[in-house]
Image (tube, rainbow, N blue to C red; front, side, top):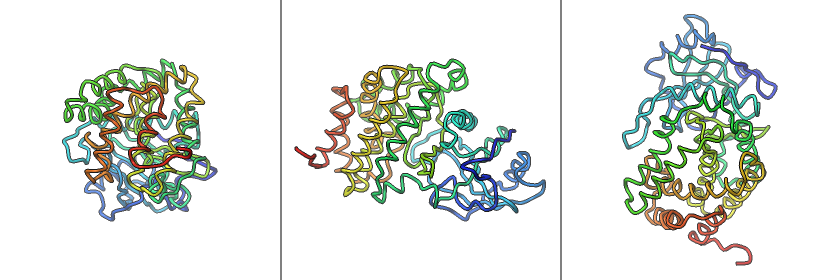
Amino acid sequence: MSRSSSMHSGRCAGDSDERGGLNRVTMSNAGPADAAALDAALARMGLVAPGETARYTALTGGVASDIWKVETRNRTFAIKRALPKLKVADEWYVSVARNAYEVKWMELVRGILPDAVPPLLGHDPDAGLFAMAYLDPVVYRNWKEELRAGRTDVGFAAEVGRCLARIHAATAHDPTVAAAFATDETFHAIRLAAYLEATASKLPLAAEALMALSRNTLATKLTLVHGDVSPKNILVGPRGPVFLDAECAWYGDPTFDLAFCLNHMLLKCLWTPWAAPRFLDLFDVLARSYLADVVWEPPEVMERRTAHLLPGLFLARVDGKSPAEYVTAESDKAKIRRVALTFLRDPPARLSAIRNAWAQEIGIKEPGA
């Protein structure tokens, strides 16, 4: 068990005047079945007094972990516990050891970008959980919900790109970090097999390309990778982006983080169609700001690998184990398949080729076109 610093943005993260949070928008009043065991774990971390009973409120929104808002006599915080079976329709089992790697990712990134992660309050490896600050959702807005409402901020998207690049640059070609995050088995199971390889099993015509992407991504070892850079895992904080849910943390190919996030800018065009042109602006700005800070390899090489991977991830949000919950119309799925399959057959060198093809597919008229 360990205790971590609780200071963030000039405030004590565990103080009772903190009302918001780790930031899952929906809550459930149902308490955990094993509340007594959680109380004991919190006591071991020194977050509650021995024998004290905490109040738990489930925070929903993820499929891989149980996340609870915890209220005690003198503080409010959040705890996260990885699940062995993910909450999706397909059978999907992953080692809960990923919880410990998420903690290590947060500790390392705090040394690079102190405001980009929630403060850690404690970690109980035996219980498979950790505690962190519960950040005010009024102050720390969830980026997915902002995008859903059509609220697009190109400055924030640029900062997401810059922050990702800084994390990648600070950990590039570092054998110590590589050894600490040698999580190939977990990353393969929860990312590559679930997205690319599951899609390959459903679409034989694309199988060879998808399996090659999986192999090549797994074999590339350059930087520390978050592994789930989705808008739902990013908070719009007063000092820039705050990244959550790094349980897929892995030392490998940074293109996965960039492609995973850019993928959501394309997908959101179907969720909030009237804001689609602005989502494509976010795509452009995020990619440009990230690539401007690539120093560990030639930026054009990084962009080429990202442009090769992105169509596979795009297709996986229709045909993989974790389909986007808002892409339900068969006509929308067909649009994604048309664009993704085109570029899986003929991989582009530039991200703009995918972005422009998607704009044309969904009927966006570009200025000057």
